[in-house]
Length: 457
Image 1 (cartoon, rainbow, N blue to C red):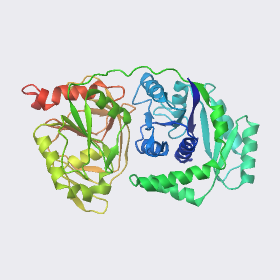
Image 2: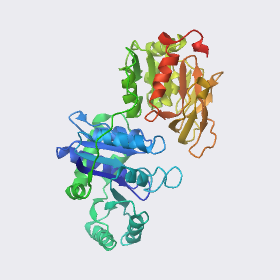
Image 3: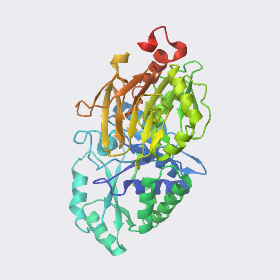
Image 4: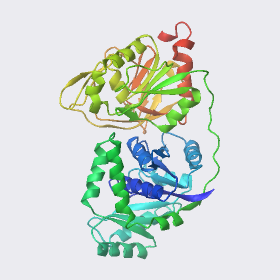
């Protein structure tokens, strides 16, 4: 297959990558093209926004993560190639600066672009600069000869005359300029809105549409597609596919719980049937063999979660009856006794786990994680990512069944708690390269298949 594929990257964070990505995805959809979005790194929010921007009339392609730390290069390429099928154009958004990786440039946007064989389009924040972008572009073009730099788009440009200085600079160093994005207060407000609001889809739709209108006037999208044509190989079949009988997996999904890796859901669907449910709105649980609570922003919907007393009781009952549960970050907070909001209000949660969390006086916990769960019989290293501002106030007598390390192999105090057949942690695990982990949980800890004594083992 030969089709356009490119990765939008930048010299540093906050240069406008996400804005450009969302705008370009929507512009491509308006052209009648099936655009497949990808996000480099472990971000869950950007993939949600990508999915929205790449959709039309409620139909589109779901954003996928490409992460060189949480997955092997083999798996990352498999995700890319599998999702390239049926798409007209492939758009990846980088993470941080182009060469910023977990260790030096390892796992960086540049490393991912080279592994996938796709060109990079650099997004440069031109506020307060003109011809000085020449040495910047020269450096990014020549630092790694194996990296293909297709062109540059300048962001936050004051006037067309300002852009002419920038275009001249790019021409002098041999980097093609594909256009610019003028500074605009409405764009700034849209960017802030998308960063702060994750559930008001109609308003997100309006913000993305406005971004596309703005960018489409001054960026040469057709030329971008011409410069980014590459050969895409056929996709290998996914590994580890087997249905686990009539297993049903209940997955929490609503405004409060929506930070989940698409690959995790794909893997769960290989082993059973997914039944969605909403801790906010539903009054019953699905008849499930396993419940999966992903992360999200439960603190924004704490009052609604507390008000749904019947659901909280059903979840607690499921845990107490030794049902299999896996909960991550916001999901763990929901399973606890209580959650304290930013303003100091205490909200009752499920009471299924003897822990309390708080949004007050919290600091950011951020980083890749390596998880060793050999204590429960799983012999492979799991990978994941931790990102939260909440803090654990108390964890009672809950057992920690994991040894967790950072990307640089430093021990961190993050736990994977176990109570009966419920497992919960602040870490968002990525199962793409360990697809046997969910079936390990199902085979060993699911009540209907558990051997005598396993519940306490």
